Amino acid sequence: MPYLDEMIWQIVAQIPAGKVMTYGQIARLCGYPGYARYVGKALKQLPEDTALPWHRVINAKGEISFPADSESYKKQQALLEAESIRFQGNRISLSVYRYN
Image (cartoon, rainbow, N blue to C red; front, side, top):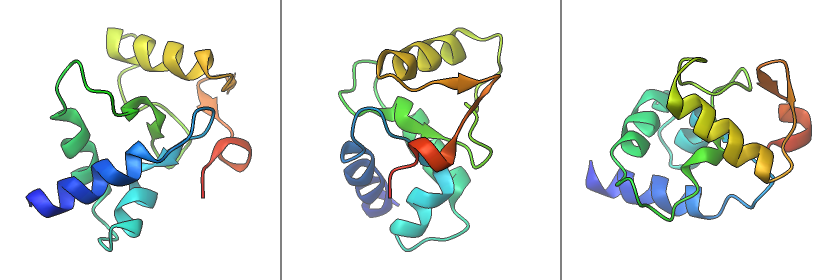
């Protein structure tokens, strides 16, 4: 669904530094509640050198969705921490950092 991908990218592009959104939140904003996994797949297909702030998208638990010991997890965590987002264990407080 190329038009849905485009909507996802437009929303992700608007997430400001220091804030996060969840996959489900983005799906609902696109008018596709229940399509959180699709949002993840659309972001997974981005080119390596993308300027979109994909790292600001996390799961509904406030966690990074990559396996905790993976390079992708470490990269996303480092990018978020560079924007002053603080983790409590392996979670981000959605009440503090969620962008609405």
